[in-house]
Amino acid sequence: MAPYLGERFGNPSGIHATARQAKNSIEEARERIAASIGAAKPLEIVFTGGGTEADNLAVTGSAIGAPGSVVTTAVEHPAVLESVRFLSRVGYDVTVVPVDHAGRVSPDAVANAVDSGTAVVSAMTANNETGVIQPVVEIARLVRSVNDRVLVHTDAVQAFGSLPVAAGRGGPDLISVSAHKIGGPQGVGFLYVRDGVQLEPVIHGGGQELGRRSGTHNVAGIVGLAVAVELAVAGRSDYRVRVGAARDRFEQDLRLRTNVKVTAAGADRLVSHAHLRFPGIKAETLLVRLDFAGVAAAAGAACHSGAIQESHVLAAMGVDSRAASESIRFSFGRGDDAATGAEAATIVSGVVEDLS
Ligand code: PLP
Image 1 (cartoon, helix red, strand yellow):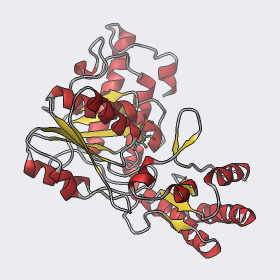
Image 2 (cartoon, protein in one colour):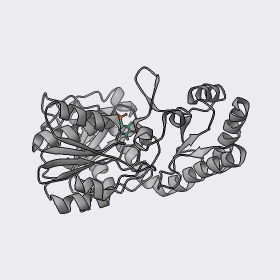
Image 3 (cartoon, rainbow, N blue to C red):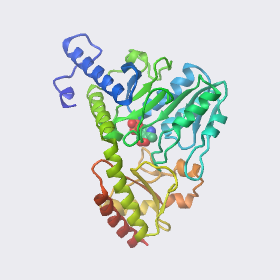
Image 4 (cartoon, rainbow, N blue to C red):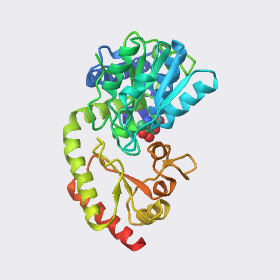
């Protein structure tokens, strides 16, 4: 990325040599990302300012592009849920499908919410708080059996590093990905838009990205995004083994030493996520003590003020507010393995013992 923050400063929309160099770099990034996810054409990749923007473009852009109702799930990221609320405020019919106690959505329930007037169904590949994986391909199949014009969107922001996310037959029409969740820079991402899908832009202006996302490109970010995507795809199996070993060892050691409860233990979860409850210990207290001990964890949804808001994901799973206030989320990543999982468990169980 470094040259694009310095001597290669060109704006890809210009016509001089420096601009052409920048333009070539983003088109190369587009080709590499398209190849990495099995997209049929590079132009199916629309660069955005991150996952939130990709979700807004997918949900709002498809509902307005071919007007119709919107169906989503109760555990989506706010980028989707707030887009859906916006559409509801301006008169669109929306249905938010509930989840079971393990945070799973039923494909039948999603299909039952779809009719001939549905424009878009948005169901995330995996949840950012619990790591619970949704049956997106099955959802796509069932909703298309009810209405074959419906667009299927999946927010794959959290899942991309560990699960195969593929464009193409049978898969979603729209896929959101964010660079900073896969080791890339913040503030850049992309939306895969299947060839032929018409979206109404949500950012209007100079017509970049074939009019689908106006605004001068973040060239350095896009170059970094492409590298992050390639590394994530190439390293996925290794990631699953190593990071899974870290998370499993962490949970196993904590089970032996504390009375931890693992959220959604029975569901299919991303290997990176450990969402845990330590009964009797407030999440805020635990987070502060863990921070002192050098462990970064999270609770609820981190809002812009840094305050902890009660999690809509846990509420949708029927977790009561006391249990929710005692729950925290750990995520492991590239660089972790069974040894770092064990080390984290030693620190966390020490702090939990202290607070018990
Ligand atoms: N969707 C999910 C599932 C996420 O976890 C996040 C980020 O936390 C987003 C969307 C938003 O992505 P970004 O931070 O790139 O705007």
